[in-house]
Image (cartoon, rainbow, N blue to C red; front, side, top):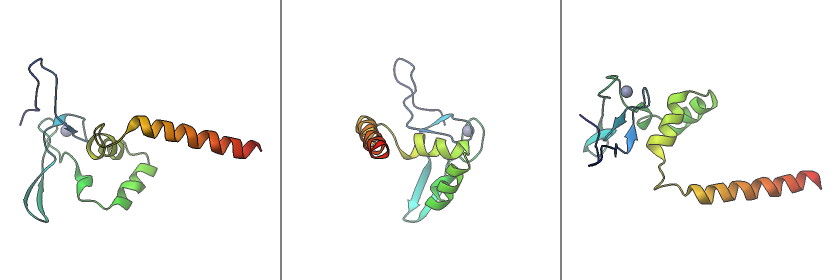
Length: 106
Ligand SMILES: [Zn+2]
């Protein structure tokens, strides 16, 4: 399965393989509620994103262990620019940093 391409040749696939970063159109196919099949990457032939079936706690542990595929899952496949307001997150982080910095220096 080839990744989706625009007329000008840019890739429009929304997801990426967490093993190699190759664009993929879909991460799983749902046959019935609770019955899914994970898609394999066309480039590396591995399961594109196996964190879909994992508990959130396993993802958090892998994030603490700095596993790159856990970060790829989080930033490419879990959150996207449509689902997360990065500008609001940036301003909230700056505000929280300034408030905590003021509390430390008082
Ligand atoms: Zn891959």
